[in-house]
Length: 287
Image (cartoon, helix red, strand yellow):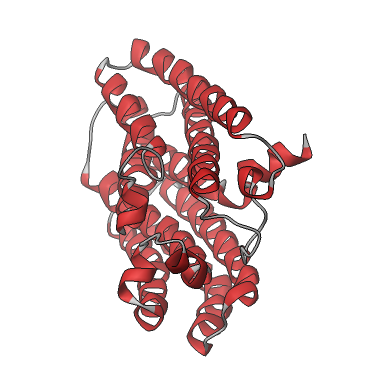
């Protein structure tokens, strides 16, 4: 069980939890159906785990995650699990996401089925398939769209039956925070990814610009989240996330590399969770 928990990458779970919490906060004024919110959380977490397993599988088979990897060990790359086992685990996770999404689609709108299919396909083809877009430097785009806009707006929509500007703005903030986690992860792996010909955005733009991009995504998430205060004043609570973002930003700008960036991954995940929960609370407080 321990290896499967490791392969699920719990550090990335804030990327699934935060958009559902924030989208639910957006819908609080109209009224929240709590079982729908819980089901949306199951969908988001299952998609995250399925994407992580499929990423582990594809990178392991391609040899990207070898023994010289600077980050945590991967299931296939380290030999802890076979490709067939990890493929099955990814399939189970995506099946859970599909089944839960099917229930939501049945009670909300059939259009959610298309969103679900697109989300699963995006998770699989991130590093899977003949031309994985994660190897083309498009990983941040996927994260911003699906773990930011789609997940947040969708989590609000299942309660309100509408797409509004507040949900989109909050989704953009959530998307940037999720991107910051991917950016610092790819910053850590520049050397090994480049050697494996994995052309992430960090590899393409270089170390210096990646560090700047990290600051832009993390601070941008805080700023966009606080702008939700134009409609829900308590959203200014979002700015308190700067207390955990500050040390991470200073460390990244100072030039730490390799395994020394692992603590900054943890700080970024904590910032993402703290900021997201504060934004969700701020959006939920009545005017």
